Structure formats: C-alpha cells, structure tokens
Length: 246
Image (cartoon, rainbow, N blue to C red; front, side, top):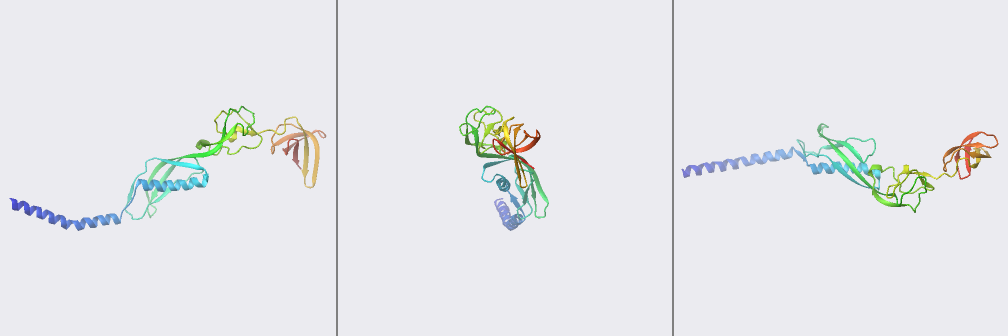
C-alpha cells in the first residue's frame, strides 16, 4: 500500500513538472496578446484631457475638477493602449455630462460609458461689505476683493469695479457683485440742457438742446435741438455734450 501511494505521488509530481513549461508559455502568450487599462490609469487619462480643455478656457483662474461616475478596468486582446475619446461640448460649463469612448487600434469601439464633470472655480471677486440699496453708489468703501467659489456664475462676476457704478438692485452684505447688479451712473439727466455737436467729414456744428433721456458716457440718447425743434440720436461724450454723427 505504501509503495502504491509513493508511486502515485511520484507520478503526480512528474506530471506537474511536465506541465510547468506549458503553463509558463500560456502565461507569456496571454501577457503578450492582452492589454489591461486599470480604472486608475483610465481616470488619469480622462482627467488630463479635461484639465487641458479647462485650462484653455480659464487660463490662470484656480479650479478643481471632480469626475463622477464608474470608471471601469478594461482588458483587450491587443498589446497597445486603447484610444480614449471624450464627447465634444459646445462651450465650457462647470457642470457637464460627457461620454467616454474607448477604441482599439483598428478604430473599433471597445467600451462607451458616461461621466459627470464638476468644475469648482475659485477667484478673487468683488463682494459687498455692507448692504447696498438700489440706485446707490458702489465704491471701495462698500466693496472688497475676496476669494470665492463662483462656479455657478463664473462668467458674470466682477474682478474690478467700473467707474461711476451704481447698484441696479438691492445687494445684500456678503453677496458676490455680478455684472447685472450694477450700471453706470448717469452723466446726463433727463431734460438736462446739453450741447449737441453735429460731426461729419470736415464739418462740426454745435447747437444747444435738451436731453430727452438720462444716460451714461458712451450711451445713445435722444436729444432735441432748441433752434430747429427736431429730435436726433447721439452718443454721450461728457456730462454736457452729446455727439450726433452726420
């Protein structure tokens, strides 16, 4: 019995040793004809692509990208890396849905999966240091620059205060001041007496008249000449002059 068991064990050992080269060859073959892209590696490739896109839009503005979604591990029968493509977007948006497409060397689609990209944007922007009522002056006394997360309205903020600014609405203390929250203070009031300067090629004539609407510098307003009692449209040049191109 003992000799029989000994003979069987010897046979098993010999068989295993005989099979080892084939197992080794099989492993080499599998290694040689397979490519595995881990989820971490794929995540890094996707992040680099999105970072490159975002950098081209935001330039030196500070931001942080968060990719949400399940990023899989991919194994193919090829030895080269897969091509990773992201669906295009019409314009930059801090919150976007993207489609990731993986292709092999022949251009065949291996895998498609969705991701959500959240971009947090941080910038020094104008913030109200006190409540600013409607139609009140906005200046360095009631505003300051402060770093804020502004992803929801990144393209609507102010990083510097335009001259002669007044509030276009009530602005509460601590609020980020947006472009739509301010307007330029009127330099000319409605019914104010003004100089109407008619300018053309080699011609300049000045008449007295009246502004029919208030406006800030650079804005177009209607004016009426006293001499001819006619209405013209002109651009405000100063607090007393409106230019009409002829």
